[in-house]
Length: 473
Image (cartoon, rainbow, N blue to C red; front, top):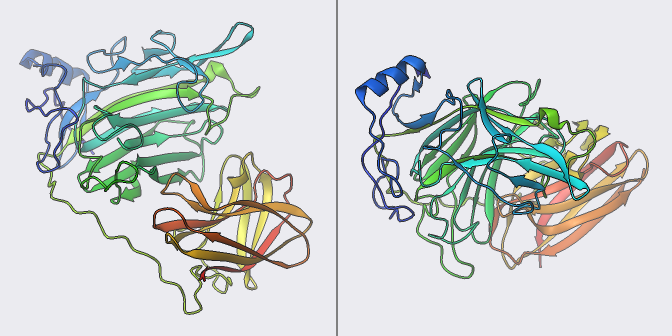
């Protein structure tokens, strides 16, 4: 990025909110609920003197907020109050209080506060949205933010459609998550696309080798185009998605690229508790429960080619012996950090290592973490076809008796399970395990075989070999 000048005006073209046809390019901000703001030359000059916003080659600046004032700019943002439990079993009440949402030292601060109500812990926090004020179709969103650390804290920068009913309620309407970080694992950031029905999602993660996303500000961005979306952290690409859909259950899919061919808006919030992060505990320091945002900038190309087609799905071919698991005998000492074949993952306090040797994989655990997937071995791209039957077999043993979990999951289909989470007790004796399942859902080229070794009351070393997933009659 190069810093040159401030773009102060927005395009005067308007589009009907929620009614993008997908046949024409959208090059402007939606103005369905307010007139385009006209900025005088004097105002533009004064703003440019105060703020320096970077140009991005090939883009125009559509709108931005540097949070350089002394209060939330309500020409851009709305407060969105909600009662506790409104979604995801979250604990917080979203308020309009300046105790929860305020501007300080050039940053927007969304603060979670713990108090007491009716003799019980009570939490308030903030959520702001640009709905009906800065809606747009296609563009590049760039935000720089610093997240809080603490069990149960859940900051997010994300996007929803201006007219959620156009394709139907969530997930049919679509959702673009630019950034989410769990306060219990601030070394890991997520970018996710939600769509469906049935619910589909695609997610990428970035895990820092050193430091955390709570230590300092990082830049999060997404490039949204008619046939592709790309996620970045600090300018590094980590997720590309070009295959999505939406449909009413049992009906044909809407024309691609629905639902992401309509105006969306940016929103930011700090949730407390809920189904994903879990609830706060005695370690959560609410004096430091602040989600800070340095800026939000939305850019747009002068035009977009909306004549796009959905890419064909690629299904992995089985090996000659019928096995869909590649390197199932661990004959190759492959890289366990890339996205090919086997991958070893750590989340939510999990600490450990994996090594391939002597035709087996050896998983050592230093800290079992707080969830079953805290220590995890996976192989993605398992082709699971509706109506077919499958068998999973493998050999496993451990230094001492302990439990692990095996499953075949659907990362792109709401994390449903084709083979249900199955807990098995392994012993120091090498044993063969066999599990059969039938696929009753929509064809999925991206099923995932998982071995989960976290949060089972043991850090005993696990050994696995002879892994197979195959079709059976």
